[in-house]
Amino acid sequence: MNWNMIGHDWAVRLLQQHVREENHRQAYLITGPESIGKTSIALRFAQALNCPKINKNGDPCFNCRTCTLIDQMNHPDLTVIEAESPGAQLRVDQIRGLQHGLSLAPYEAKYRVGLLLRFEEANQQAANALLKTLEEPPRQVILILTASSPDVLLPTIVSRCEHIRLRPVATEIVKHGLQTKFNLSSADVDVLAHLSSGRPGYSVQLHLDPGKFEHRKTSLDQLIKLLVADRVERFEYAEGLAKDGKASSETLKIWLGFWHDVLLKISDSSSQITNLDYSEQIEKISESLGYKQSLSVVQGMERVFNHLAHNVNPRLALEVFMLDLPYHEVEIP
Ligand SMILES: [Zn+2]
Image (tube, rainbow, N blue to C red; front, side, top):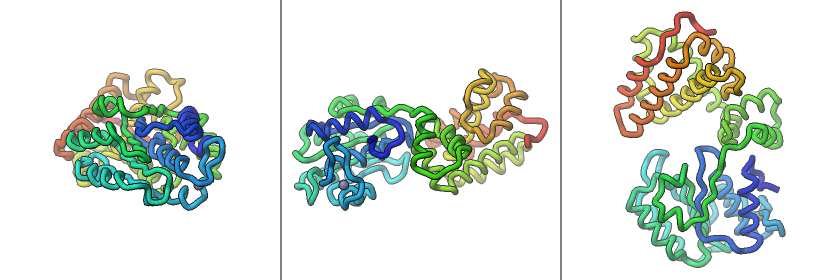
C-alpha cells in the first residue's frame, strides 16, 4: 500500500520502514516542485506516526479520528506554519509560536508534529530560530519541512534533516492514479495526466476545481487571441492582468507551459507535449514561428517572472512581454 499517494512509492516505503521499526528521525525535509505531493506525504507520515490503528506494515488506517483530523490539518498535536501567502515571508514570531507549542507534551497523540511548509520563504531570522530546535528537538517532537529545493535553504538546516527529494512522477503512473481515485473517461485522464508534468497534485487540483481548469482554458484562448491583437489591445490586456498579482502569475505559468510545448514541437515533433487538448494550435504556431522566435518568447517570459519576483511593477513587466510576443498574421482557430 502506498498511502493513497500517486507515485513516490520509494519515499512511502522509506517512511513506512521508519514507522515500523520506530527508528524515525526527528526532522525531515521534503523537497520538490509545486504540487508534486510534499504536503500530502508529510500528512500521511504524521498519520502513520500517530494513528492508534496502525498496521504492521506501517500504514495508518486513514479513518480514525486522529487520521481524519490530521488530514484536515486540524489535530491538536499537529502545528502547520507557512508564510501568509505563497511568495510572502515566514516570520520569526511564527517559529517562536511553533517552538512554544512543541515544548509542551503531546495533547493526545504519540508525537507532536510541526509541519513547516515552503520553508524557503522563511526569512533569515526565522531560519536561524528554527536551527536551535533542529539542534536539540524536544523528545516526542517530529519536524517536517517542505521546500522547492534544498539549494534554497541554509546548509545547516538541510544537514540536520533526513532529506526526501520528490521527483516528477511518470505520466503512466499519474494516469493510473487518477483512474483509481476518480471515475474519469480515459480521454480526461490523458489530458489531466499530461498537464501535470509529473506533478500529480496539479492534475488532482485541476480535476477537483473546475474553476481552475476553466481558468487555464480562458488563459490559453486569450494568449492565442493576443497573437493576432495589435499593441493597443495587448497593453489593455496587460493592464487588466497586472491588477491581480496572484492571477497574473498563474496566467503566466500557464502561458509558459504552452510556449514550452511550442518549442518542444519545433525541436522534436515526436515528443509528447503537455497541453494535449491544444495540440492543433501548438502545431500551427510551431509551423509558423521558428525556433529562435519561440525561444525568445520563453526567455521573455522567464524575465517577466524574474521581474515579478524582484517586485518590478507587474504592469511594466507585462507590457515588455507584450512587446516581445510575436505577431501572428492569421487567426488561429
Ligand atoms: Zn487512523
